[in-house]
Image (cartoon, rainbow, N blue to C red; front, side):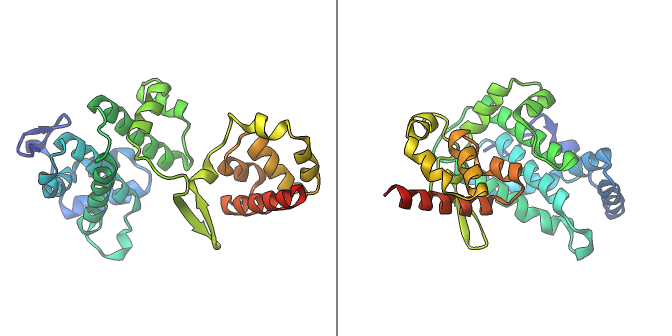
Length: 258
């Protein structure tokens, strides 16, 4: 990994700006007020921090441009989450986040090699997504990301999928109130929902014995092919509650059918 080159990702590292403490404090005040130009200046003023971090990974044989881009994502996350009231230097807070972002990348990228062009598209999409969420406080659609970066949405989906590491359907996502949500809980089954459910009329009778909310959840999950997150948004409860009600409903239906 060549870290001694002057230009990384089109950035001339020999001319990176250095911010004074006064400038940092002033810029952070503007950032908290939503000043995008101040945020960009703060990012550029801390790119040397990213460079110092990626030197720790010189033995990984990864492309320096790739690590720099990943490190910049960690830097942006640090800027967006940094609390100036904690009386901690920004670099002290940011370095572990940059390292963590790079380690996740190395861990997820070590089994499947993805082309440079695909990774570039994925990085642009991730950067656009981060900006959109920060500005709009909601998740962007693929179409909105595509419009922002000027790349076909099909290519974006392919690129993002390519950099994901394979995982088990039983991989836990998070736990809320004692209920563990798994990857499979967030996946809709559009292929088999008609063949396996609609054609079996006995299931309709089992559904009639459910409460209204449980019946609606089963309808949306297995007839309409919606994910648990989509169901949660539609009926106004948490995904953990949807998961719990769905499991209870399926258990009741199984008992009726058996």
